[in-house]
Image (cartoon, rainbow, N blue to C red; front, top):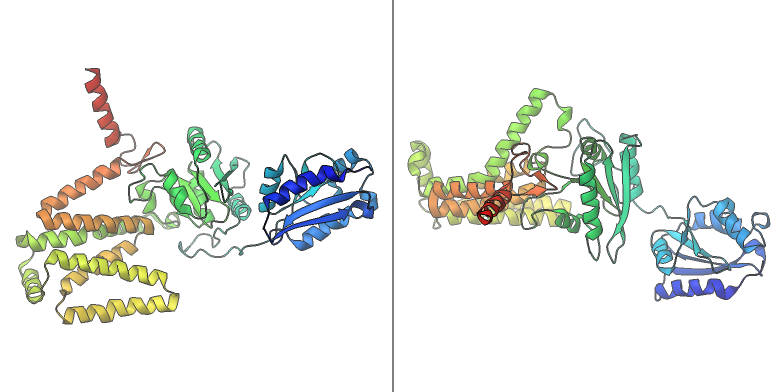
Length: 473
């Protein structure tokens, strides 16, 4: 067949210019059927393409005479029809589409005509295998967790929801990263308006790169200034499948071993993945225990400061005498003492997370035992303050979501300051403001406090209605 080398070299040169100064960009000329008059050009990125698959499914068929044809149109039709044994082939409309295919593990083939390049998917198997979840421990559920490969994650969900009603919409997000996203929902269970709204919001996002869940969570959160998490994330496919069956929408991103679930409420952040595997009485008891931990992590430091500074008559006499005796030689006020201990606890927690495992455990033991005991013996803090801060910290760790725990610790500091300024009155006012804030958060039309206030409008809607009525008058 008569091939015009300049015809395919134009597309190859444009692609080569896109990957200028990229050492992993490979451009190779191959004679189709070992005929020098029938050259083709192959382009790929070394490391993203499996070399063995490239040789077995692309190079070997291209050099066999009986698979190819001398006619240009017939040659292209045979490549698309199966002369090359790659499992996936697409036509790139231009250099930009061909470059995007190369960055996702494809090999671009330029035949000797002016037609678009053919992109064969030969992605290398880069990534870790499916393992047990590390953050969400499973007692009676599955022992598989999401990995960094998008198609593996979707396959894990397909195994649990083996129905064609599980729909998957793919898109790309990030001007620099071009990260593939998968929007999953169960047809008939999920609200179509919710799916359309979420898809529209994702298409409207303008991000440079999506390399973590932070940009996605921030963009999908209704109240961006709130410290409370509004997007539920999980590393367990069985938990995500359970939420999809309940009518929610899931979001997976290539390169992230986590799945995002929308809409999310406060009750779901306090419910662990294996809660439904427990018997009713046991599950109810544990739910009450987590609710108690929620209140302790939020209110205990502020309540102790308010009672110790303004409402000593509410403390039992023997306990009050013990507190007074322990507080006599401490030079700091109760509020400053508890606030300092809370900050020290947060610093100790961050140090334990950032250091390597064995060293982090050592730092935690030293901080909790040696430094704490030395501070008590040096009369810098009272033992009661350490017990209060430690109890609030342990209660925070009892909650399933660490993002929720971080928000509670931030609000606990604010409530502590309110209790130090105005006692129980300031603490009550702070709780009312917190409740107002939580009631005003909505996630794609659903209240954050659902099902407690599922049908009632939030404070923002009530204020808007009052303003509309005043304008109408």
